[in-house]
Image (cartoon, rainbow, N blue to C red; front, side, top):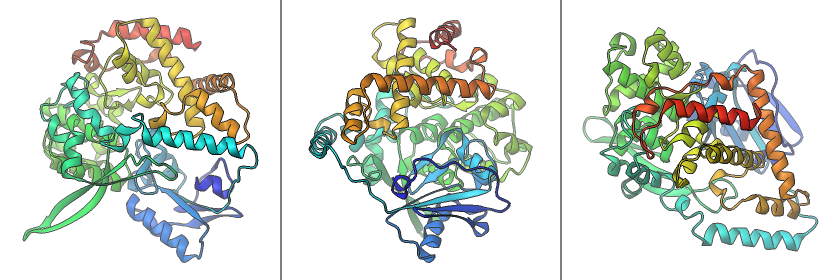
Amino acid sequence: MAMKFSGYDAILIHGHAQVPTYLSIQPHKIEFKNAEALRGLSAEETGRLLSQMEEDAGIDLGIMSNIRIGQAGERLIRYASVVVDTYRHFGRLGMGAVMGSKNLKGIVVHGNQFYPIKENKKEYQKLYRDLYKRITETEVMEKYHTLGTPANILSLNAMKALPTRNLQQAQFEEAENISGENFAKITLIRKIACSGCPIGCIHLGLHRRQFSDGYDFESTVLSYDYELIFALGSFLGLSDPNDIYALIERVELHGLDAMSTGVILGWIAEAYEKKLISEKETETPVAFGEKDGFLKIISGIVEQSNEFYKTLASGSYAAAQKYGGVDFAMNYCKNEMAGYHTGYANLLGMAVGARHSHLDNAGYSIDQGLSEFDKEKIVDMLLEEEKERNVLNCLVICLFSRKIYDMKTVSECLNAVGISMSVEDLKTLGEKIFNLKVAIKKKMGFNYKKITFPKRFFETECLNGKLHEQMAHELLDLYIEKAGI
């Protein structure tokens, strides 16, 4: 929103700064500013100081937003995240490392322009009221406003789809303790929304910790959601919300992607258990269910004190190639898994999706909705869903609200602000974006025909029973054929 109100639809940054730098963007002025004083600071400190530095410079132009990296991005860790304002992130696939490679510590955008509705005002107002009512007064978005995505913990656990202890199990015996219900009951203090949104899906919990003897405590407020509780909870065998919060906080401060970090920690715990690695590598004992070792390892990944940690900076795939445990390094095409073990649609969807994400094509949801196994239907649904989501992403429409914004509604919204796009136009756009993504990946060296799956996916029973590797590859071949790759 700040970008749009500053007059820009896109920002493209070339090259590499000689010293740590941040970019200040205003409607009529763009500056690259020295950020050497921010070198080595956490993502939280950097965000606070960036805002303060801009205010001290006398810049007060309506909406201000900033994105920034922590130490993980500076040190080019492949799964470094970019923190957006307070509680949002560009988390997966290492955008933080890209910014770090450019010596770009952050970007601050100021916007004070506005865009009046010049035509179709009545149509715009009616559509706005209708959408607002559907969003706030129906059950479609209720889950996100009440428990939020942590509501998934108990339902996925019941259907044998909650990855636990590095996917050695798909059910967690302590699921009740880390459920959305329990997090809300004992930690939730408030819910907030992204700018302009009436839902309030960002759940903020109180993390209280003792920092010295004599009952000396301090507290901080952290956001939590399903993927964080899975990756830093069930996947590591942790059942105390406060232990999970401790890991969330450490990941946040360093500027790491929480999902990749948690899945990497799961591989480390099992590799340590199987004696593929030892304290020589980890520099600390580590075990499922024990938070202290995990906390030390998270910091070790950022500090990179030895060869093991330098390897971990490239992810679980690189670490398993060097130290063993490839069969239980839970990643899809080098990107660590998300919190679903539902069946073939999820397995294939995360392998072929443009970002290897459950959000690319909702394979996990397709698995839950299928009444019977059907190869053709699975592939067709994955392709259709990804192409439609390309349109939503292109328009910066939150995927949580995808049931509100079907293609007919999106077309109506665009027409209401003077952009003529039919449903067929939108479908054509989705297809075009899909083909562009495939072309980009192929140009960067990605080969769909060389996709492999860790054996663990076929060893642990899921919602639809045990999966078979041969069938996974048959589905992959069918997908390649139908996608025209």
